[in-house]
Image 1 (cartoon, rainbow, N blue to C red):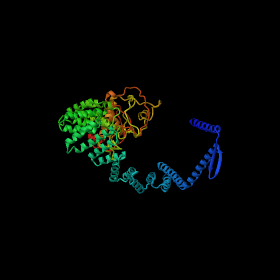
Image 2 (cartoon, rainbow, N blue to C red):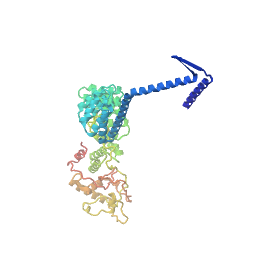
Image 3 (cartoon, rainbow, N blue to C red):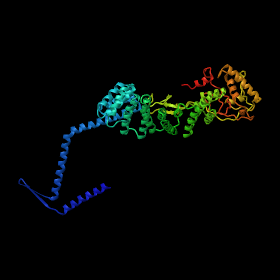
Image 4 (tube, helix red, strand yellow):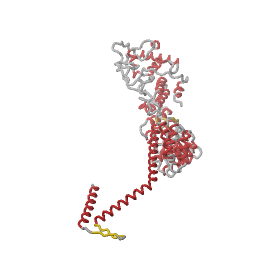
Length: 577
């Protein structure tokens, strides 16, 4: 719209000028070299305009002729640049898609057209990496590192290649060189920090962490967490030589990260050994409220080395009451109660977690039953522990450690260890959990003699084993009196015990032992059982599982290797690392 208005204004001005000259005619006389030229004003103006236009055209032609070589050279450069840009773009796309053959083709074209361009060097290095030519990649990255505009990129490539050939000294040198740059790249700052941690240079790692924070490579929350981890690692290294310095570092770490269990446990242990038990207790209690952990419970129980087992139990119960209701609190109380021979307190603490127990819960229940003289129940709990879910452990990069470490031994990452299930997030088949079922009726025999194992199982036995519900036409066996059934189970248990203390008696003996340990309150109640069809068939048959209430489940048990002869030693052998 604006252009139309401008155009109309110009046309109007020209028209006004033409009309103005037409209304004011005049004559012009030019005398030059004895000649006189008479003409009108309009003709003279037209002649002047024509001469001006011709002059401009002639100058443009002469200028184009004079500039033709430069224009032609510029055209060739632009055309060459477009071809080079197209070759680099297609080469990078080929590298990204993993097409080494196309990448080599476009790289050769880019090198022929623009051999010294930064993008050409980058394409050459990445093509060499894709093709497996490490020497060519290192040579190209070294060329890039010698230039000011590609220095950091070249150092990064050299760092990656040094890591691939496991040359940690060279990798550290490249990272240190890149970290000296005005704008420190994130990879360089983190690599230098991790290398110093691997070398045990905790002071140097703290200095590098400060520089990373000032350079804006990490946020404040990450800085506080990593600083607490470095303080804890440094305190661990000084615990045997400079105890005062170690205590100060551990306390500072516990303040920076209250949920960092190793820092609080170390600070509590060192303060307790130094006689500052009240301060140690406050440190552990603050960490326990944020993150209950067995290391904290052990450090809290050991604040007074001369205390009796009952006093340690009282202290652990106090600690458990200060934090959230958690399985770790129950396990700590149960462990202390077993040491103090307070079996009722131990059973009460473990009761909420026996429906779907983990290995530590099942092991403590086995120890509890053995301490109370019930070896049959102890064996049953030990069998459940074999297939129970794993307990949390210090895990980093699929590496499981029995104690916390500041860095991962696999990748060298700082603060990589987490207290979690090592198999968390992985699908490892069905998890065997207790399932509440209807009580077994008296019509279903709980004991099968050894001589009946070759006989065809009845429909009721098939239903109990998970093979399907009993048919209506199948005859039901006669019910045995409770006393006769119990005596038969006891005889089978004694025969199995004489043969082998644990699993040598076979399936019938194990079922007999399970039935013998059940008291009369769990006897069948004489009503029909509703068969339960499992939603998922487990890949591994579950063992004889008494459940939290002692119901015997007629499931086949795995046959383990022969354990030690002593029953209590067998329980401990299952949980040795």
